[in-house]
Length: 573
Image 1 (spheres, rainbow, N blue to C red):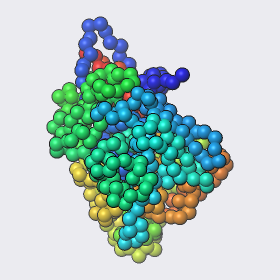
Image 2 (image 1 turned 30 degrees about the vertical axis):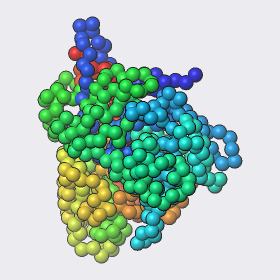
Image 3 (image 1 turned 135 degrees about the horizontal axis):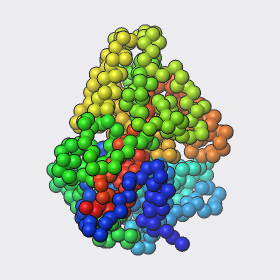
Image 4 (image 1 turned 90 degrees about the horizontal axis):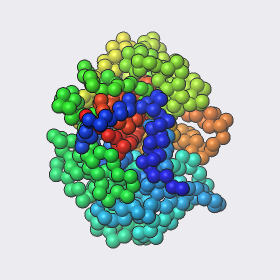
């Protein structure tokens, strides 16, 4: 029997309640339900398209997972959970890995157009990496995809245009173990909108026939057509396949989500959710009683008054880290190693990364010594062994390594999205620790910062979470963490490239033998500590708070954010 997603959410909530739940406040008969709930999250509202580089790197999953549904979503512990309201997906026998997808027969977008396998074909095409154009240094992808992981392994998507069924067949030489991360919430976009705006009669036919003009127009729209700004929003481009749809967006009024009248699943408990992103004045919104759910990086907002809230600070699945350029001042691996040696990782964890009730082992127990393995994984200890000499603030070693690099008195510009008090303190502590080694560190945080500034050479390092996301990030699958270091990945803002690392990533995705996995993860981390494309700091501590009277709030310190079950929220006062 198919289980509606709303029921699944409540079951997850029951499991998670002991560790990550808000106090579930029972409503008294004298209390009235509030018709709108304000949700403050330190993601950025930049793109509707979570599969694009802009959408993924701004944290769109924490905002739109209940607007654009998929076959799976990221649950509160970072796991992939089936969303059977959207449809079902199952592996079926075959010579090659084959997954059969069936969209819910009742599924329809908020504009009245049924969901169809066309949506899967567009998602695969955009993220497969196979559609390219000539560039100065070889072929360049037409689609600005955050990652091709998994999608590049798909040989074909069998789909009759307009059908509810799709069969996804992987290449005979490929196998993708975390296939549940494909066609997921926030990433399955409405193909009919792309077709209409790009003036393409049929997305499936255009892609199957490799019509260059049609594919270029589709790519142009996929890349930028779902960008969100505070100017007038053409809501006809943003239909919903979930319990909420976009009503409006502005800097003044936030992102207003309202109940989708065409939603076929369990109706949302509250008809209106107002999302306030990282760029808002959170103190002012709290003062105005405009916010009842808060999900932000711990310590990111100074002197935040959360009286009247149930507050918890927990280690998240995102890896707070410095993503380094591999050109310019960091063109030498010795320069990157010198910087890694002077970054005071232990001191940063002790002051900024440690949650109040830090565990003795597991997630959040100490500085993060791995970029791609979670601290509560059985593989973490051996894989993280290469971090030993990079505990931090080793001035003599940093000085010697810097001399070997030939870089005299380098200046490092660290960029991040302001306002963020914790990250400002992080940069200040790094500057103080690295100065004796002859390394000058400059705070290059700005209110309009994007990680693409690293690629453009405007900064030398990005301070952010997994995959350079400013807010909620990470999952237990680790797909984004691994993929963001792949050669050519849209999320690889430092332009790191290593053929052996890419081969390891491919094998990790295909081989589930635990011994092999351990050996590969250990080799990968040793390689990364040697090449130093990034410096991991700590598991991103998240402050998550629910206002008094807020029911069914379950903390989600992952890429899905605490809004993962916003359609179950009830506020009574």
